[in-house]
Each structure stands twice: as structure tokens, then as C-alpha cells.
Image 1 (spheres, rainbow, N blue to C red):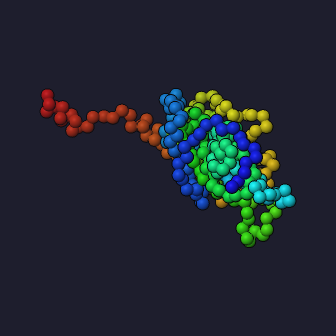
Image 2: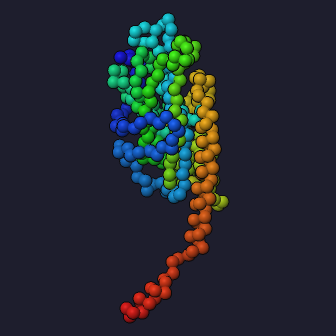
Image 3: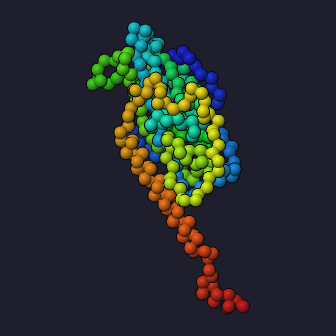
Length: 280
């Protein structure tokens, strides 16, 4: 079985639900996470507004070549990154990676970007990835499942110490009815797609998240593995569609507000007057 070399301290355990990892891009909504006791009334929610965060999760495995042995043939990294390699710390509070139980301390918690961990081993297995969000973002979580792949396909040729085996999946996490604080913080953030707000719409001053602006831990554009990351050309089109969808939703919100102002308070109907007369 795989052998661990550099275990990270686990600060919490997490119950992971059975969810199939999607082969095609999806729009994911967070599911319940009962360990988070956040009072949703503290943050005003914006109805008919939707925020989307494109993310990529996957693994990258390097063959150790002459340094390989029976227990350590590959060094690999599992990660969650922004689809355009931007910092996700503005949205994500922590990521929990659940490794194979043969590893010492198989549940690893990463509490600041980049959300990744590296290990050495020889076996392939499924990694559970649980994404938790800041308190003003969502009191739910997202569970993802990813198969660690160490060995290249036959058509890719023999394994090499210079070229890694990379497997990534693109998804879009959707947050309906976001809090004002969340929207204010990510309004101009390049990793997040937000709707175009109506003119005159006021938001509170943005409050930075706890793991933002940590020295040396920001986006992955300067990541040493950056040139191996997959460029999702199809994802770029999906991002454009997501942006267009946000604009349509913002327009719907504006129209609903205008209609509510034009309608005014509901007026009693003639039938209602007749019923009142009969009763008197």
C-alpha cells in the first residue's frame, strides 16, 4: 500500500458523502455540513443573485526514476485551484483531503492557499476532497472525489521523470442568494463571477477573509507546477456563458424591483368590497 513521508497535522475529522466525480463540467451547489453553526441572520442575503466560482481539482504525479523503490515510486500532489490560477482564499476557508487509510494521518487539513498537499507512494486510489467556505459565504460544503493516477496511458509512452501524469477536472461552484459581505469582498475578484448589479445598489465595505493576504500564499500563477496545469479551453467558453448568465439574472432582479415599485400596495378587489357589504 502507499507509504507516507510527510504527514500534515489533522485538526478535524469530516464526514464525506458518497458523490460521483463528474467527468464533464458541472455546476455544483454546496451541501449541508452540520458542524458549522453559523447564524445566517447576521448577514443579509441578496435574493435572485447568484455567484459562481470556477475551480479545478486534480493530481500531478512525477516518476522518481532511479530514486524509486517498492514503496515510493512516485511523488504526487493533489490540489484545488482556480480555473484561471487565481487565489481561492477569498472564498474557501479550508480544504480537507482524505487519503487512503494506509497513510499515517490520512485526513489532512489545508487552511490557506495554495490548497494542496504532496506525498510519495506507489499505489493509485480515490482521494476525497471536501471544500469548506468562509462563514459569510456558505454554511455548507462541497465533496469531490478524484482518482490519483500515477502511471501514463499506453499511448502516452513510457513514464518519465521529466513529464508528470496530470489529471484534472473543471467544475463551477454556485452560491445562490449570497450575503452582502461575501458579494462585497469578491465583487472585483478575478477568480469569481458576480452579476452586474443595478445602478445605485450599495454594498457594505468589504471584510477580508482570515486567510487572505498571507505572505507567500496567494494565487497559483507563479506556482512551480503551473506550466503543467491543463489549459481548459472549453472552460473558457463556459466562463463566458456564466458571465452572461449573471448579467441576465441581474437584469431580472432589476425588472422585479421596478415592477414592485409600479404595482404599489395591493388594492382590494370589487368582489372583496361586495363581500364586506354583505357581511355588514
